[in-house]
Image 1 (cartoon, helix red, strand yellow):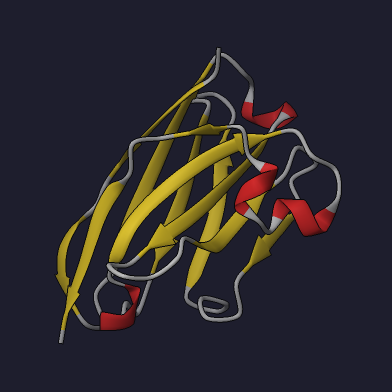
Image 2 (cartoon, rainbow, N blue to C red):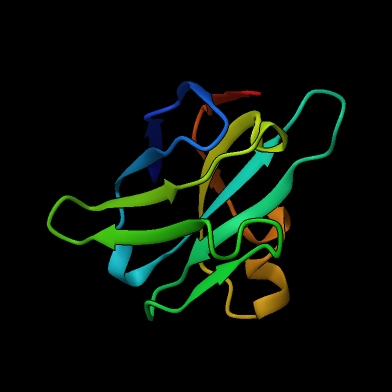
Length: 125
């Protein structure tokens, strides 16, 4: 059983930074795909970023150049560094784990089997 626990959310102002953490247990992050998704009120869950088993990273166009995904194998944790936050980034952020190889599935929620409980990020203008 794989478990993922997010932390690091909060209330910030536009232009500020936050770092989200996703602590993974039951599977080594170096052999696993971990993705970040977000869901704003009234909207569908959307892909934000992912780091797959090989270390390759993927980003949604809306966060490229502002967000960075990384992992620490010693802590078995995946991070999402979010810089220059905007009010449009306000959402509940979820990390998820999966084993798919197809890039299309890495970028979609259906490619992930295990999910964390989510952490709220609120960006005020």
